[in-house]
Image (cartoon, helix red, strand yellow):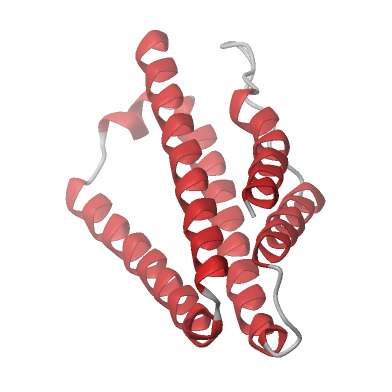
Length: 169
């Protein structure tokens, strides 16, 4: 069990680490992933979770809604990041636009984005519920370990990006 979780975690980190550590020079904009790259990354993540869980034939019938929810969240994230990149690109060249922000509009937009993310996350939790109830204690332990490892790695990436942003300022 520990070997499986370690192998899955290692594969996840090896797959995601080039994306986390890749940094472009300050003068050039960072390279964005193509839609094919996003899809490949999503496929890898899904395969890693399935491999870690080692689902039984009875449990596999609960998997399609989970996979659909994971893919929907990934698509929304890709669209959100593309929108942010476009918006930041347009604003970067205009001092007038940067100086004339409407904080109320910003707060309303941010609330809408967070509500959508909350709804997507709730949908993912609802998709997981039927399968989670059928998991053995060993499978639940593997899923929890995988979730902790992924969340810890994401936290590290966020911290590194904040530190880089502080250095750039």
